[in-house]
Image 1 (cartoon, rainbow over the protein chains, first blue to last red):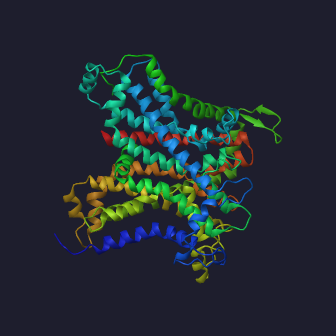
Image 2: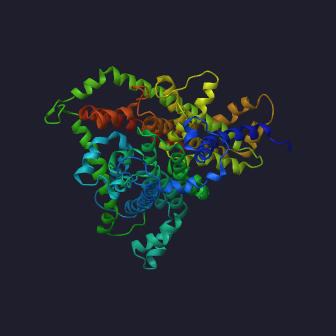
Image 3: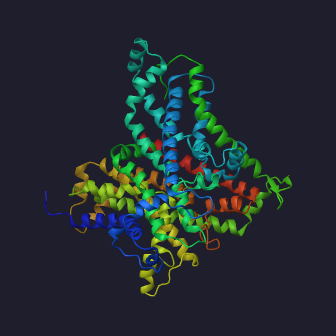
Length: 278
Length: 292
């Protein structure tokens, strides 16, 4: 084959890479500059390395609105929310897929279709009535309110059901002969065979949970349950003078956790996404 | 498909599906039913009296010029975003699939934007395009171009299209790369030989093999651009200036939560449900055809 480097491919891919890195680089470099310089419209592309302390200072920065929480608190809420949603979705979806695939019980298919229907009901199509339900249950401004309604997952249930249906009959028979009950079988056989899918789902749902905006916008009114994504948008929409460098530093902090999860678990994530979303 | 080997118990499966069903019922079905009910009600300006009005909320939507505008705006928005982000994903995927040095590095550098929150994508673009501080705004000003998405409707719409597409490229990249990797190596190599006809070869040899993925992505990208771009748009413009970026999902929020037109907003919710049901049925038709 020809050994000549594929200049065109490198050029296109470098351009693509820059297209995505450039805005983040501006944010990073901007964070290290003085608020005054940014306000004058002088964002330099060269970061001021002596100002890296801004990324530490940002932790104690609040959104400037009355009753708002500092950034470290927002990050904690976001982390709790992302973890609860990711783990919660995996657990309840695996359990319900197990029930639907391995048992016969009344209204089994009805249960399956009810779960399936949630695919067609994103928050935007039921905003006000969902808010009424939340308020009737006293879930506004609470952590369960922020997480519980986002834990149902039709896609994860469908995926687990598909994996469980493909488990060979011999494996089930062998487990039964060994005297394993259903939960023992679930724990010792089903979970290990679906490990790669669980890892992929974790990445997808962690990112989904961390990145929520509309739901916190609807359900948090006081600041104690502000997530970092929601908090940052609040910071730039108020009438107050915006400390741009701190906002940019907070943005970098808010980007890091989901990016780290995706990059670190890239292998499972890429294989899983094309599997989950079909 | 059904399993032949099963476990025997009636109580255990009920306990296992209970949490998922409870959440589905309380937070999905109940509110969806609520939206249907509310769409037939009308509440006066003070929220004191609610009366049954039948289909009048739907009738006033269908005859509302604002709703028509939002509908057309949404359609245009979806078509452009879908085309831009799919084209970007396909171009980068076909080059990243070539056997070149550093292809794994390139891949991860094109995949990671998947992790960025849509709302934060808008915030990052504010740093670039904000009328006073934006880096690109100031560059454009140097060329005598006045860029202000807070006052100029067309610029606002163009910017939310750009951000929504930028955010979705990595998703399409991942799917197209996976599809290209399953195309036999010999065909890829034959099609990417240097020369003026390589684009022609791509179109006649590889593009047809990507068709199932393309169809699937068209539907998922339409769902994304119609339903999942609320964050991008609302965080940047709030639907403004005026109603310049008021697509259907932003309008349903503004009318319901901000302007408290509960009946009108609920009627919009019901129409949106019909839209997403249609798209999801299309999606399932395509995926079942793809896997058989």
